[in-house]
Length: 199
Image 1 (cartoon, rainbow, N blue to C red):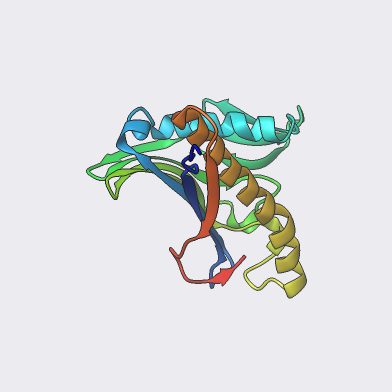
Image 2 (image 1 turned 60 degrees about the vertical axis):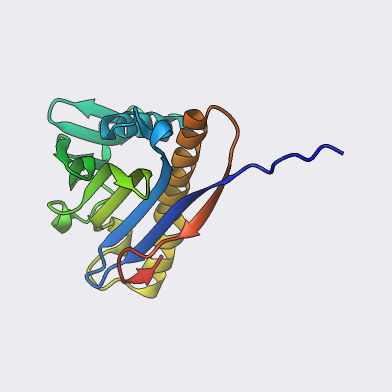
């Protein structure tokens, strides 16, 4: 009888927490071999992610890259859901990153538009390459303030936070399958990067 080797499960780590100041921290990553990650850059992650957001939402959300930043728009309307400044690129000994600072949008608390960022990181890790998407210090409008009610927390958790997690995890799973050249099993595992109230 022929025995078949079961497919290796690729892990995608995930954490979403509400910090003490009621800002949101969300991070997802997967670690691939040096061979698979050799050609991956933060810019590639960024470009592929924007395209995936549009595809996943059936073009309801349309990322627009402009000279002065990036906007996630609803349909073709001139209204930005979340606005970012131009990407800032950094290269360190451990790897490279591309970060966009949040600067506005109808999904952001109006008095907190000057904080928060979305980052794409490619790092050396455990003999491989870690591919990370990280959202930090984000103050969503749904939470309302630095002291959100339990109802607002639940509303955010089961809408915006859930959608962000699903999109990011599926994006990383799709990217891994493309790098690996075919079907692959993926498994989401909890991560602990920061302390806070789990979302």
